[in-house]
Each structure stands twice: as C-alpha cells, then as structure tokens.
Length: 306
Image (cartoon, rainbow, N blue to C red):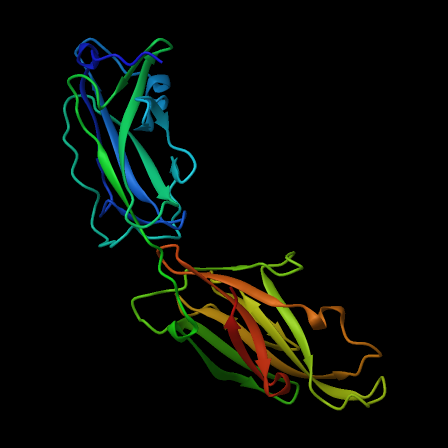
C-alpha cells in the first residue's frame, strides 16, 4: 500500500484524538474508549462519503507496515451503550478544532491486551485505490495512546444478596432477592445466563421440599427459584399474583415462590438444571456465579463459579 506524505495537497486537517474521558480501557474486550478522526478538505476539494468511510485506525508493526486493528485490539463504529468509559465523568466529548467543512468519523476501541500495555494508534484515509495517507506521515502528525488496564477480579465477598418478602397469600408466597455489589459505586449492568438450556432470558428450578413419600395427586408445597436478566422493569406472575421486577438499577433479581400443587409421579425435567450466570459491572469486568439453594429450597444462595 502506497502511503503518501502529501496529505496537505488535499486536506487542511487530518488528525486523531481521544474524545472520551480517558485513554485507559480495561483489557476485558468489552469496555471501550472513543477516538475521533477529523478531516477537512482544501478549498475547491471535497471529501466524499466513500473517502470518509475508508478511514481506519492502524498500528505500525515491527516491519514498518501500517495494519488495521485486529486480535487483542479492536475498533468498532458502534458504541456498546451498556458499558461506561473508564473514569466516566458524564462530561461532553472533548472540544474538536473546526476548520472549514470538517467531517468526522468516530471509533470505539476495546482491548484484550494485558494490563500495562501501551499501544499507539494512527488514522489512515484513502483518497483513491492508489493513494493513502496516515497521521504519522507528512504534514499532519497525530496519534493516540491506548493504555490497557488489568480487569478487576471480583470475589464473593464483593457481592451481597438480600431478600424481601414481597407477597404472601393463601395461594402463593413470593420472596424477591436482590443481588448487587457491596461497593455502592459499582453496578451490575448486565447478567448473562449460560445454562444447559438457554432458550429463555431467565432460568428457573423447582425445589421439592416436602415428604418424598407422598402419593401422586396429593397437594404439596413446591419451592421454585427464578433468576432474571438485568434490564427493564417487567411484571412477574405466580398463580394469580403479580409483582414488578428490575425496579432497582444495577441489581439482579432472583425470586423464590412457594405454591401448593399436586405431587408428580416424577420430578419436573428442569429439576436438576444448573443456574449459572456471568455478571458484568459498568466497565465490562465480570464475575461468574452459580445460583444455589439452602434450607431445603426455602432460600436462595449463590457460589463462585470459575
């Protein structure tokens, strides 16, 4: 690829900047930082949509070749809104110098590099199939440094599970559990199930806690456990009763119900399903857990899953 040093014959501005709050990014492959490339043409010149679309982020390898990001460093044109920028202050993006008809292209960079890695990135634009410019060559000199940070590793003592007696009637008893980080500055912004059967956005398990010798057809108490993805509020129904879940941002809901139902000749198929989840904080760091039970199914608990 021919890299020309004559970008100023076509452009009056060509630069790359970090426009999120920091150049740091957790090396978990999920958190992103925002980088913006700004270009402006000279008088009587233009930048077409095709030329703007050709802009890419590149690194300079040991052989002196500019290569687009891949592998442990990735650049997307779409931001993942679930995860915040590092040290996100909520402030507006950096002010960008404007000269004439400036056009911009934004990238969202993620890293799986080891903590402490420093990577210098440049922008490249193609004027045509034979002429390409990089912000490391010629009149326009700019680059950004991406600093990868070791992902946070959470232990069980960093999480807290509490329960509230949400509803207790003659037909159903509903306890709603709230799983959260003990540190009030951290939130569970995403929870992903990786159970054997993943056809739903929740998982449930029936825990039979009364005498195993009861004959089929007799009425007994069924303890049923549910675990739900973090997300928008929604109604949860058991029998004729309904409660609202996901009312507390940054927390994951689990539910234990007790219902009076006939005994079965065999346990329901989902009796032995494992309820396993990956929990993500607002920076994309994760902790895997397995939802468990205590007190013969009357209470929900959880354990670390590596």
